[in-house]
Length: 77
Image (tube, rainbow, N blue to C red; front, side, top):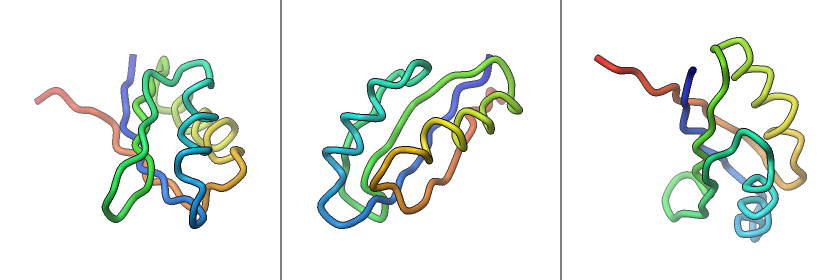
C-alpha cells in the first residue's frame, strides 16, 4: 500500500469546491483547503506507485478547477 499527499493548485476561488469534490473520490482519505502556495492538500492511498499515478491523472486531475498537482508519496525511513 502506498500513501501520498497530493498538493493541488486550483483556479482562483475554487479551492473549497475542489476540496469537496475530491473528498468524495474513492481512495481519498482526506481533502482540505489550506492557505499557502497550494490551495488543497489531499491524502490518498493506492496499491502501488503505478496505481497511484493512474489515480492522480484519471481521478484527481480530472476534477474541474484544478490547475496543477504535486504528488508526494509517504516514505518510511
